[in-house]
Length: 133
Image 1 (cartoon, one colour):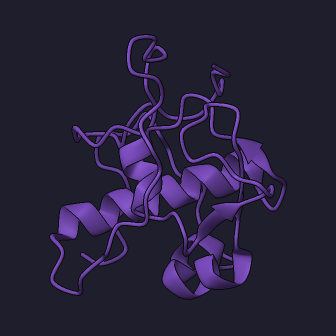
Image 2 (cartoon, rainbow, N blue to C red):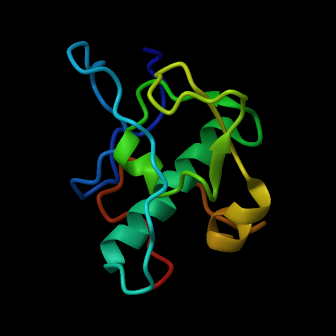
Image 3 (cartoon, helix red, strand yellow):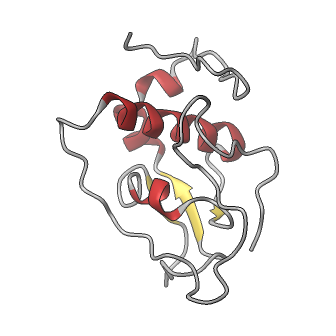
C-alpha cells in the first residue's frame, strides 16, 4: 500500500481521518462506494469534505493518483462525483486503484478550494480556516 507522504492524516482539531496507518491484511481494502450527501449534513462533515478536497487538490492536482493509504470512508463521500476512477476496469477494493479529481464537478462543489485567492491550508493549525463562519 502506497503511503502518500505529506498528505494530512486528519482535519486539524477533529477526529475526521484522511489516511489510514496500515493496510488491512486480513479483510483487504474497504470498498469505495458513492455515499449520498444530503443538504442537512452537519457543518463539521461539510468542513471535512472541503478539507479533504483541498488536500487532494494540493497533493495531486489534475493528475491521476493511487488510492494507497487514503481513507476509504472519506473518499466515499466524494467518490463518483468529485473523485472518479482514472482507469477502466476499476477495482473499488484495491489499494493500487487509480483515481482522479473531476475538476469541473469539484469546482462547483468546493469553489472556495479552487478560488484564485484560496489560501494554502495550514494542516498544523488547530483552528483550520472555515469560510462559512
